[in-house]
Image 1 (cartoon, rainbow, N blue to C red):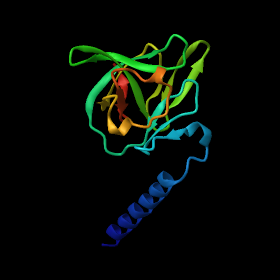
Image 2: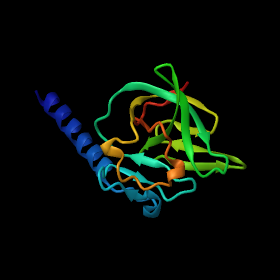
Image 3: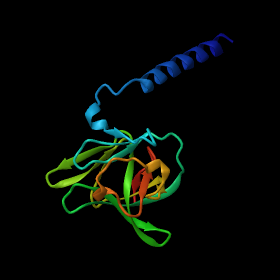
Length: 165
């Protein structure tokens, strides 16, 4: 009985430490880079980076299989995803998991996604997530250049779900 109480005590202590660590602020983060939140969906914001990217902290997300190839506009100011959905080509604006950062090396550009790593322009990937139409209520108010808003809407990528595809 004493061993069970001891095990429960240790488990509770670990749980408290874990919750405290997860609920703290990102001390290393740059609040300027967090960006502007959407007035209609505060879990979605646009980073103040070049190029800007849309990130989310949504907690309940559909888990359909999504994916495509990360592409950049000719001027390097926008990132989109090109792929095939329901046997039709699409180009969508990605909405990345919170913590995703733009990365550049030499002339290459891409993103670094928490739990995955670097995804460069030209890389194919698969993930769990969903598609939002351009007119989706959750996307209203996202402040990003209209040049970066793909006509086929948005591809929302769930955290910790990306794999090479």
